[in-house]
Amino acid sequence: MADAAADPTRTSAPIHDVVMIGAGPAALTAAIYTTREDIDTVLFERGVVGGLAAVTDWIDNYPGFPQGIAGLEYADKLREQAERFGAQIELGEVTRVQTDVKGITDEGMYKRLDTTEGEVLAKAVLIATGSDYKSWASLASRNITPTGCITVPLATGLFTATSVWLSLAAATLPYRKQCS
Image 1 (cartoon, rainbow, N blue to C red):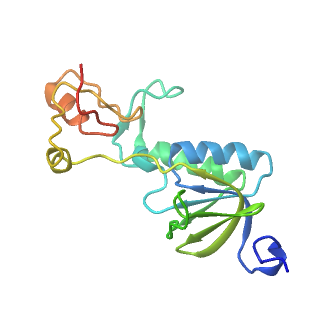
Image 2 (image 1 turned 180 degrees about the vertical axis):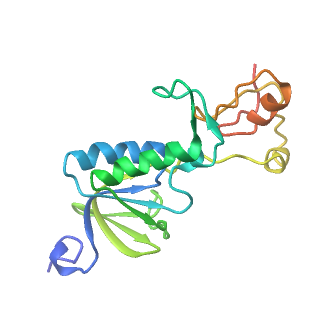
């Protein structure tokens, strides 16, 4: 007897071609490509749509915006374009870890995801959970001194001539224990 995951007609869980975990610039860009090809795509975002770009004041180093662009405006444009082609964005998250891959169980030709919205089946899963800033306290608790390291997410626009900003930029992901 076939189980519900092997036979999707035997389950009430929605089935999508692609489920993306995260809705930052990488996932939204991927969603533009998938939905333009009529691939049913849903994104789950637990924070803010647009990721770190959405909470960045100003982005000066992204191609196509020679005068720069406000981070929130850039995130809104990404979302608008993805939704224009049919991407569905859900404010929720993958909630249950069932295998080594966070929250994803392989069920034959489908992946089963437990989310805050319920169960979802997908033919493919793209994980684009992005990065997050690390606080000084979390770096200090690991005896990591970021002085002299410049590790900045590409779209933050934190490259300045002041040492204060360079020190703050060093606290962002990814960080390194030693820098040369």
